[in-house]
Length: 238
Image 1: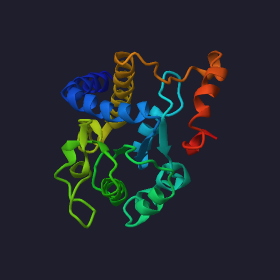
Image 2: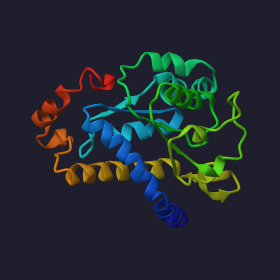
Image 3: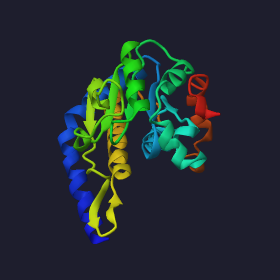
Image 4: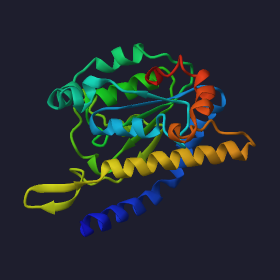
């Protein structure tokens, strides 16, 4: 346990290298939010938790649209979700189902950055003039891509934030293989740093950021007013 804590802290400190990219990503997101647009967040597998970290939580920004497709997550069949994220053509179906406005950015998260679904989603977004923020581990850049283009997810990013997750995700070598997963912790840090930087940008422009209050601390009425403007744009709100 002590080794895990030490290793996680060391990896979190490496995220200091991403400050400029986090600021660039925050500016893209802030520009959309200031124009009453939303930021779309897409991932598969465990990486989908990044979407949930940004969505509908106390202290979080309202204008986040998480694209949560159950068949790409573990709870409706973990092994099937692994196979689905490798298939060609799924991303176009998902993209076409979204309520989109011109210029709305996408955050696309994939630790390995090699599977078809996130790569194709990034490619489609670029073709449709959406700015793409990629969160991935550049430690995996030498893995073989499963996409026909041979490209990795990071190659489609307008901004790439490296989460510095080790190959195999675990930060401790054991006789059973890599243990002590890291990507969720590191992605959570990145998510909250984005939120905090966007709040700073609002304040710099003397604007009030649309921030959720805790529903368990009397925030219902406050949140209801904020949600009213975006309830038709953010599918997961209802």
